[in-house]
Amino acid sequence: MLLAMSTLIASFGVTILFGAPYVGTNKRDARNMLEFARIKRGESVLDIGSGLGTIPIVAGCEFGAAKVHGIEMNPFLVVLSRIRAKRAGVEVDISRKNAYTAQIPRADVIALYLLPRMMDRLKPQLASKLDPGARIVSRGFQFSHISPREVKTIGNQHFYLYHAGDLM
Ligand SMILES: C[S@@+](CC[C@H](N)C(=O)[O-])C[C@H]1O[C@@H](n2cnc3c(N)ncnc32)[C@H](O)[C@@H]1O
Image (cartoon, rainbow, N blue to C red; front, top):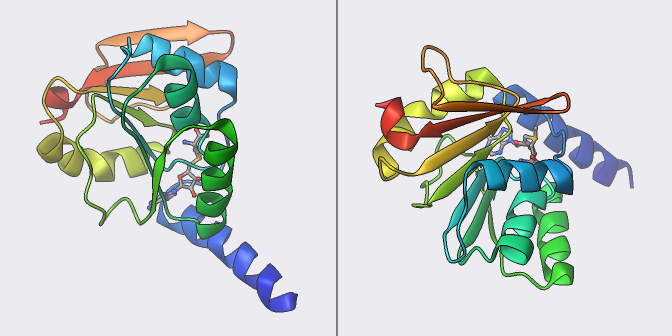
């Protein structure tokens, strides 16, 4: 029991050190992000730091996304998000990986809810692996020194839209 608790606490601590702590996006904000990115049925979606998988699940269930991926470092969140996706009846591929070293799969829409330092560190990977027209939608935070193509505020939430080609 003590070992399980220590592992749980350590896994959350490690993700804070590596990039961003877990703070979830609710379904309404996930919908707003995906609508802002103008996702179309059949497109692929990637959430980097996918947490409990809400954005990938909403993409698959409500927007008809064809391939839905998540990359998440915290093994507990990976297990829980896979269970949630299964219960929602949506096929989501969640990789338990460190985003800094993971292969970034090609996607039409990339969702980010990460601290700016993590966004900036991922910039070269995103620029080199994604198609220039891939849409990157970020909740709450912006890349340094790059102007977003569009900004949308809904309630107290700010969303930023980029194209992968803007990061080069
Ligand atoms: C603010 S949460 C966002 C979760 C989810 N995208 C959402 O909006 O509900 C950031 C997530 O990134 C994960 N994370 C932090 N650093 C990471 C890294 N280096 N590689 C993969 N995931 C990471 C954390 O474990 C956490 O689940």
